[in-house]
Length: 231
Image 1: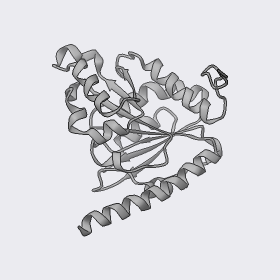
Image 2 (image 1 turned 180 degrees about the horizontal axis):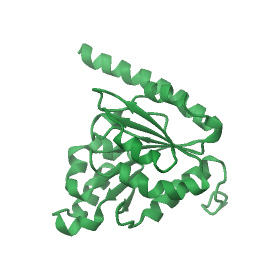
Image 3 (image 1 turned 45 degrees about the vertical axis):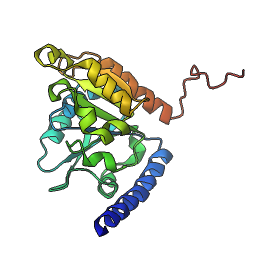
């Protein structure tokens, strides 16, 4: 029983800290994305596909979470993006305290969008709020279509699910119908976007999605969303 109490306390502390981060980011109008996936689903490849376009218009910073090493951060640094590496050593997720420490390395007045690339893991990262505006979850067709049932928390927490590697779908037994059905049983509201980071399929859609989030956070609301309809 003590273990459960301890875990609750840990999550409570984390959430309090994450709320502080969120209000700090809100004050600076910084749009924060938390990107999660299993190892190898293609988080970094997706970022390599979208960041060059986004960086033409916006000031992007990335916090890169890995158990060890800096291979992904090194890849993104080549894009002239401000990247900070966090190594968690044995932890399978990032926590708000780590984000708070990492933020000291950035000038928040010079950031429009902060992207947190979480540790590759389908279990732990879903439990830890990091102060983000949106959770993007990357799944790939090479992982199989049954992942939502196996990892329900991650899929139910996601605001957008990006199904990556659709270019190789014919070489797999991935069943899109089953995948969508399982996702919808867990999450009615998440968008689902089918992309290929390497072939560029629908990458512009993802760029638009992130851009919309950045604009919205800055208060440049698009007034065509029916906000002012009086019936």
